[in-house]
Length: 327
Image (cartoon, rainbow, N blue to C red; front, side, top):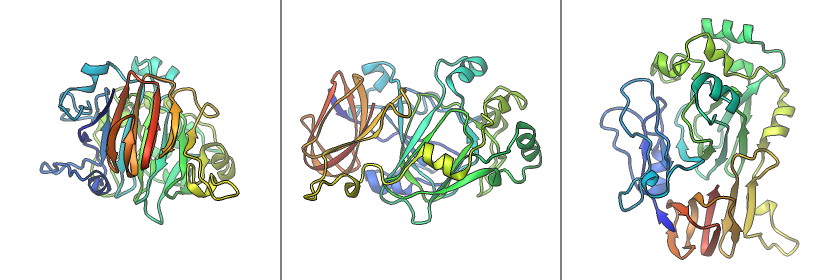
């Protein structure tokens, strides 16, 4: 089965979402004044905002209205479109051992980002502690709410770039980023800042995710690296772009693996163009049409479509179309 998905916009504290509106052709209802800068595709994970929870928020639906979880069960990944008009607050997500210990969760939240056209020319992310940052220094900076961002590396990003984020790594997505985010299926995080850059207050429960002020610092992995070490390990420039995958005759490979087992065994990501075919490691995957129009496993698809692939272990693409496939 390959099926199109409904829009599934989720509330967050940061501003954004306009690039998702333009990309998908569907705007979000923000009449309550709360930004919805993320679209959770085929999600079987519920969102946690720390206050005024909405039952079932985050759960994805097929185009016919059925909940994804009722049709195919639980997905082992969570895939999002994310659009930031401002820098996100500094945060970290648990590793699997930490998630089991602190949150009674079988999954953590290792994640990765693939940047789409529309990402601003001056976009950046903040990733990983600089050498010498200790837990004591981090807690002191948190208490005073001063100097936190300076303890992380600022890394410029552009469309086609790829960034991997280990569980435990402090990070913040900068303003002007438009991306596909692929992650473990949880909404677990701890937040180091009490307010967004635009001044929206972060609820206490969102900051410590229910484990309390002291234990929240157990989520961070206090391993500092230089800028070059961080980029070499976690950043791939222009991943999946045509210029890097043309042969001597200028022909472009129809399939490019953006993320594979060299970084993680939790999930994988490919770019598949017309004429491409991949074998999927799972029988439940998610695809985003990032350019053009064509046919994906027999289903007509065009830019902005989000697809659930279930019960099938291949993805075949025909026509002038490009998909990013996450599994």
